Figure 1 (cartoon, one colour):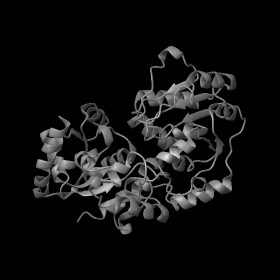
Figure 2 (cartoon, one colour):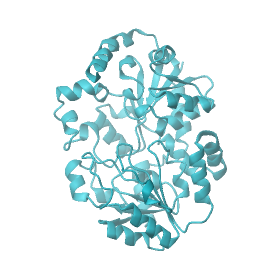
Figure 3 (cartoon, helix red, strand yellow):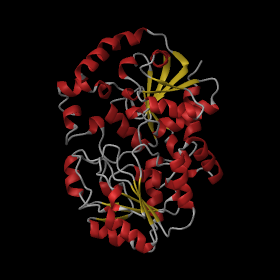
Figure 4 (cartoon, rainbow, N blue to C red):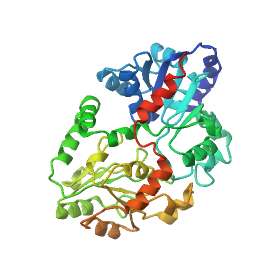
Length: 398
């Protein structure tokens, strides 16, 4: 069935070049048909601040379509006549990863704007030289080419944040560096907004569960709030249990009167945990948008995830680097630059070390090291990204 679906897609694709496209029509989408990432924040901004633009969220998920519509914005199921028509007639496509975030076979002659999902630490796309994804980008096997055509179609524009990352994106996506727009990431604006503006956004666009969690975090009942955000591992290694024992973490949080929030990567499957009866650990679903929550946490626990670049944009935060599989991970995927040059924070290499780190009373970062890393990664593009990106593409409308 999958083969037949892609075969139909290849038959449709040439006809998508025949449709006239309107520069005032902008299509938005995200992977797995969700409503998240840079595309989400930019879509909300365009829908509410650029009345001259006909903006629509297109998704393969009907639940997502209803969610976006409930917030007063335009959304369509991509497989409906209206959704397909908007995809075929919108000149600008904005997405978080690939044109398949909307639908590859309808992308002919659209201007593809890849907003990506952060400033990566690991090699991506055509920079990849090892691990499972090498079949796609190094060997370029027939199977990978057939089932992932979106990976081989170059974007017209790539969102970046600094000259350092523009060079990397240019190489990884094989586009001219002039097409890498150093405008920052729209999803990060909420991290530095004044509290009143951020909470107004949360009340308008975030689900009740997120609002309730933020209220809990703001209540002052916890000594520290930790947020564990592990990256995706190409091997899909199951690190739950030995390397991250939820019950032990919950006990440590109870002892220090703190809270642990855990959001597994969207590709990570964890076993049922209801019977653990956790009281000081909150496990978020893959659909939960973490960016409205991040400002209300004290310490980020991560490993090789790009979220560290975002977290450093906020003041008075701590970072714990939990590197329990450092040697195994580096054997699967290379880093863009030496790891030590891309991170700041306390490093621990096993679960016992993590439990000890959670007991520390203070988590302040080396400010000089942090500021140097922010300057290198973001080059001053740390706020007002929404307005900058909107202004750039608005100028392309005749």
